[in-house]
Length: 407
Image 1 (cartoon, one colour):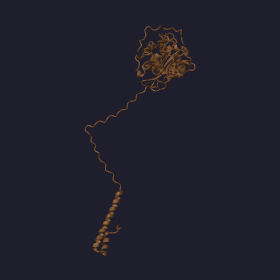
Image 2 (image 1 turned 45 degrees about the vertical axis):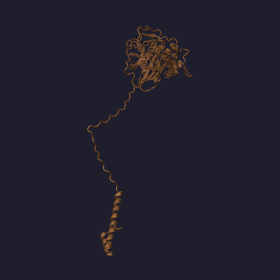
Image 3 (image 1 turned 60 degrees about the horizontal axis):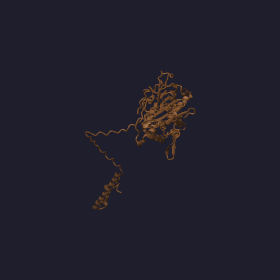
Image 4 (image 1 turned 30 degrees about the vertical axis):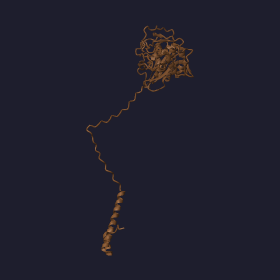
């Protein structure tokens, strides 16, 4: 209330109206009130003012004379490079010894899939085409289920099963005969046959059928493959795994197509020959490796392979006007996905197809589809008639010196 009153004016008023003592007392009270009022205003202004930001601390870095090195960052493990699935499988082939019509059909059917195909004349052992020679000559491969016809033929030869009685009890209420077991590629059926045969007999018959040894005559690049002398441990399935999956077997396309040609022609295992361009077709002489004497045993094998194409695992090979007999195989070997088909037509051609890919593209069924396309293309050109059975063709006797089996 005294904010606008001058202190001197107040003093004059008090001196005239009141005694000097009382005037001084009144002045003291006035000054104290004025001081308190001023302090209150200062405090209020201070509370509403923003607080100043705290001063930044200075950080002094202390560096050691020998600082410890920072730990190196761990590198994530590099991904394994997958095998190619597609490409140009025939890019490095020497085509000079191939039948040009057969080769064109094979290349068109195989396309860009990383695989290899061998086509052979069943009744002579003459190789008509090898597409993707690098893969075909490179090594032996696990046959997967394509080895099952050989197991069945061994079991028939040993009397374990017969043409008339070949059903096996696979469960309490489940029986399967040989025809369906081949058509469906049933593993339990062939595991049971393998365990009954045993490793020694299975090895002996494999050698008789041409596995574990070179199938060709004068084909120097061909690897010999191999057959295990000991079965896998019992906890891994034992000899049954060899019979059903081909575990431990190293098989080449040459061996497989040679055995298939023997099934097709009734039991003659020919040496495969891949004539040079200078060799004339008319001068070609087949060379017999050994006679297998299938007898009636091959009848069930053929029926099972026919059912595989008509309604089984190889049904993609089916053609309406070409009789095809075949067997598929699907498994993995290392990083590779393997797809096999081996088969023949009544017109006299035997085919072995191997797909060797990094991706799953259909395995054996896909390989059978490629084989079906080969037969289709050759039939459309009326070319299969060139390879009909020729019983009049002279043959050389079985070689006196047999190739040493590589077991």
